[in-house]
Image (cartoon, rainbow, N blue to C red; front, side):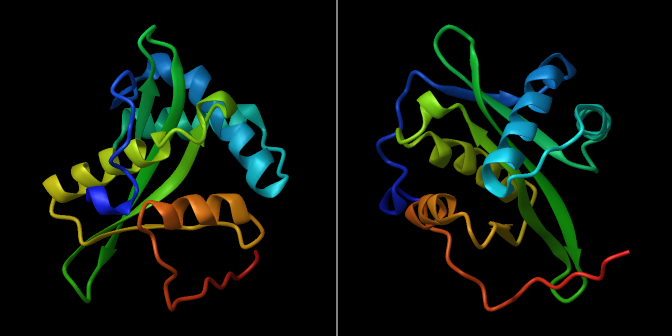
Length: 161
């Protein structure tokens, strides 16, 4: 991502690293809070733990990164999954979850998390970085637009089981 898309003023006191199983309790907490804030959903911690732990042990399922401050306190996280495109013979990368503690918001840090995923995608020859955002989550939509995301011409449809 370039400096023109709102990610040039990121504080240097925050760093991002690949998440490990030691981060599991924090990732469960962050993911549950993200679901509550974004959709009003209440997720089961045991199910979250099982899903996140599986991905931490098998990056073909998902990849997680955590952001930490100068005191090594984890203040945010992002995860991404890959989707194979037979049309383009490559992977689209999807941001699956993104969370920043409330006190860390509005400082350009989301851009640093996205930039980390985007750079990893480029290293692996990914085609494009994508994400879902709930239609009612105006705050998140505006934040994603600020770092360069645009609306797609695709709509999501589901078949309920």
